[in-house]
Image (cartoon, rainbow, N blue to C red; front, side, top):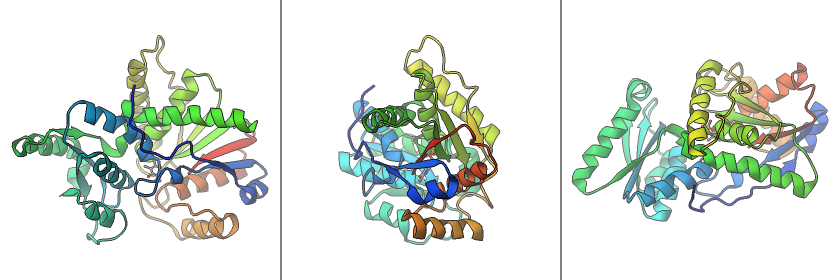
Length: 308
Ligand SMILES: *Cc1c(COP(=O)(O)O)cnc(C)c1O
């Protein structure tokens, strides 16, 4: 499978000295917040594959979907503009629309923004995107549809590659990570990391912390993506889904909502470790990691890599 090069990769891996001392485990951070400026974060690795397919199939525009302040939508918009595709985004209007953050960037990039209600988003987002894509034909557009979070088999190839990148960095730095930890919002990132681990027999533990929905939902969704990926990769034996490990007890009060404790933890890690975690995803995964280390759930892990 081919991709378009858009991300600044490989991203560096840093030892987190304060967290290492605090937790008595070697904690390393993979700085995927450094994949770029306009499209920083994890989504651009998936988009390198998805947008290649969009281009190759002769599409002129792209539609994807997410929350009002979706990182994925912002990354898609920025990447589309860069390679000459017109971006459309379907945003869940769950709160008052204020021009700030990712939404402001979406507008500066001149994305065509469509809104839907939280109910429409939950029940019908894919159908709404299909309708928008069909309607766009009359404007002479050919639209490529990307699911929420870019989380399908093709998108997850971005993190399949990222796992290989990690293993290459292990060899270069003479270290071995026994556990990889990542936040889970739509499952594609976890799926890619997990699949590469299974297919290449890296023998790592891949731990995911859900920021929405629950562990059963994600285990099913990720299994499905993995099954599709097995087809894509023409594997003789499909990827074994029995080691998928997703925890849902660190979501806190809900998606994109924070408890006072989580906000305090952001500040605590910022001032002691010099690392800014984000309130929607990485703080929840970090909270889960710290708590589960304290409770002895990482007894067999010594070198832990946290995907930021
Ligand atoms: C989307 C996102 C995640 C989760 O990735 P999924 O592939 O959607 O599970 C984690 N962290 C950040 C910052 C994200 O934007």
